[in-house]
Length: 120
Image 1 (cartoon, rainbow, N blue to C red):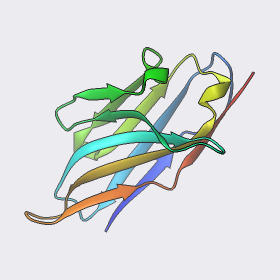
Image 2: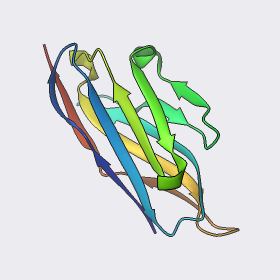
Image 3: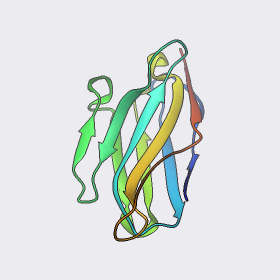
Image 4: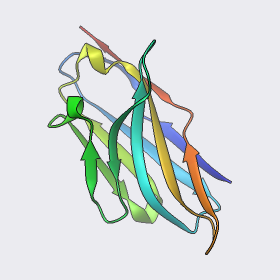
């Protein structure tokens, strides 16, 4: 099994910054895509940002220019630097990762979620 552990959420004022981290551990042979999603109360889970093993990135329209995703492949860890935070960024943030546990079997795992609250 592959576990993802997130950290770095909290309460911040509008205009502030937070940095989320998510580390993958367990039976890992390789990790390909990693990403961050968020879900606000009453809304569907949405993509925030994703990153490939080669560093290619993709961002949701609402966070472009404010958030930056990065990863440390040696540590199987993905980061999300969030700047210029807005109250509408308030949500539970989840990381996900997919890859392989051996030469044939794949995995896709989710973290437990971390709360980000932005006050006006």
